[in-house]
Every structure is written in C-alpha cells, then in structure tokens.
Length: 164
Image (cartoon, rainbow, N blue to C red; front, top):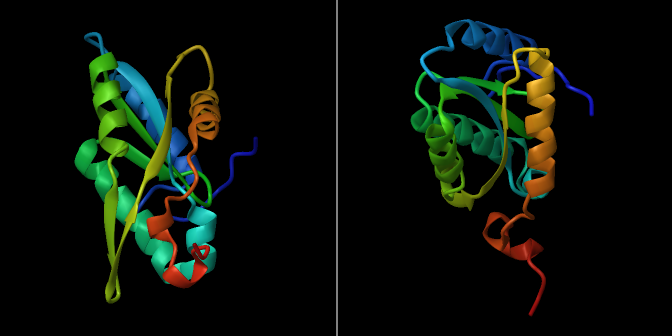
C-alpha cells in the first residue's frame, strides 16, 4: 500500500500535513483519550467519477469533508488517496463508535441542478505511539479496504443502470 500525496482541492489536508496533525494530536492525548484514525471512502467513487465527471466527483468529496467536519468538530481531516479521506481525532471507544455510525449515514450532495445521495465506507484504527503515524493511517486504510461497499444504484445516472 502506497501513501500518496493529494492536494486540498476538496478542503482537506494533503497527506504530509495530515500526518503532522496526527503527531500534534499525540501531544494532546491525556485523560483517557485515545487517538484514532478513521479512513473514509465514497462508495463507488470511480464509477461516479467516470459517469458524472470531475465536477460531481469533487462535489462528493467536498460534501464528505463537510460531513466529516460536522461529525467530528476540531478533528484533522486529510485527503490521503484519490477517493480516501482520513479523520484523526481524540476520544474514547464510544466517540469512535459514534463517529463510525455517523459516517455510515447516507449523504446528500447538491451539485449544479441535481442532487445525488452517496454512501461512505470506513475503517478505524487506534494509534500506537510506539509506531510512526503513517502506520496508524495504513492500518485504518487496510480496515477500510476490508469494509468497502459497492456503489449504490442511486449514484449512477439512469442511462448507466442496467435494463430490467
């Protein structure tokens, strides 16, 4: 698995600043708080990008970043892959479960004259300060890969849906 560098064109940190944010959050842990990383991907992003183009795909990522900020105020959010966002946050097991559930809810994307609904897959990893921050990110990405769902039919235009 290769960690790639992506720009912040959707309102998220690039990978290197995101890893720096994990390091900073480590300094602030205390009082029973744990540092966790939740990797999130738009289900069927490649098909959405292919079927609808850059404008809709970028809108889906921007809306996902906004959704993540609303679920985890103050968390660091990075774009760590073409379709992968990561959230680094402090909390306990309950906070991690809450965030995982909130991220799992369908998200409405308004773009141009249309609305689409996207779903998100996620993978969670708790930080181990004995390892480099990139290891926590890689574990979260591995869990995301194990839990990715296919795109729901609603994200594809009518012309691309199979005939019944």
